[in-house]
Length: 122
Image 1 (cartoon, rainbow, N blue to C red):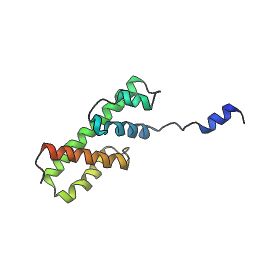
Image 2 (image 1 turned 60 degrees about the vertical axis):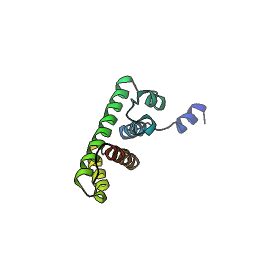
Image 3 (image 1 turned 30 degrees about the horizontal axis):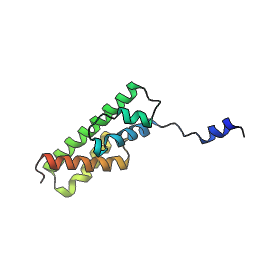
Image 4 (image 1 turned 180 degrees about the horizontal axis):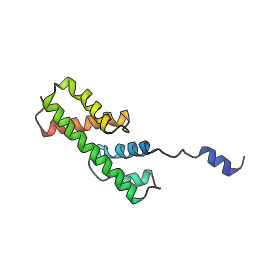
């Protein structure tokens, strides 16, 4: 087998749009960089993305986090505590079906933390 054939065989498969979105959301949910722009960190992970793509991914993830915060805050004010997480997960998955289960769980933890720090929770 030639060196080129070997490299082609072991080359990482191209990422799908959902994988890119989840990679971006993973960075956006990084608690140490909460609500910070992700373009620089995302470029380090995905050097082939152009500025427009990086900005679009950042915008989508910031919108997802804002939606999560607003949803957690609203649900925690209207539902019993035992019901909030399940309803949040259902609504977040409906709005952002590309979000992995792991990222939805992280979004829940971050957003309910935000909700408990900014409003009175039942």
